[in-house]
Image (cartoon, rainbow, N blue to C red; front, side, top):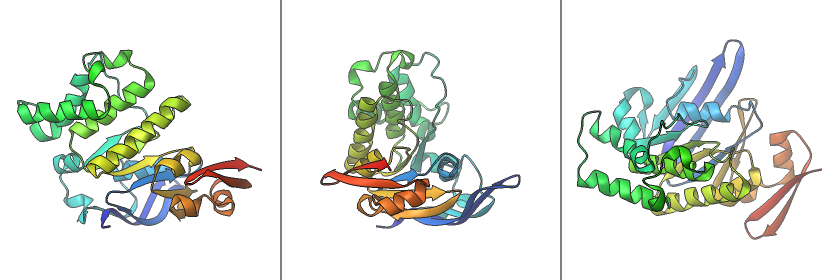
Length: 257
């Protein structure tokens, strides 16, 4: 698989604090990658740099082989979709109106939506299971339904990559599983590259192809769930003694000793 993002020698400093330190790694096309680590490890900062929400202090990032500096804002928005941990308010928008905003990078502020735009909006709403809610105000939806509406916006944007910052942090367990199952299914059906910040290592191992872990701003682990779900590796990530059980093929449960 070729690299969707290529990160080389990435560093971020805020004042005297090093938030990211010499991070070098590729995010491969068509792969669902979880970014793991304790609070303050730098994972959300790395995601924001991939989303061009922050500029690094050092290093280089390339998207599909092209440097960020040479990729225009509209072209980038057509390629990469970003969902922050705390999305902006929806101000009474219906689900369909919110999802329709995903066509903005293609049509601009004054562009008229054509039949193809409406087809893509319909498809995004259908793919996220929101057809019966499409005329409801987003503000009236449950947390899990709201997350699906924001993901549908990114799908309507026709991006090739989703960057999701803790998309399940405010959800109950049922909606956490449903959201990650949806993301995994969409990645397969649409051949998307996904990078998602998660706290729950067990859910990450269940729904992601690859686990990347940061600690104090440095890369400390990178591999398949089978490789990373190891007591020694988890202890090196989280700094506490941990054990791991495989309760079913491909389903691990970690615990603190």
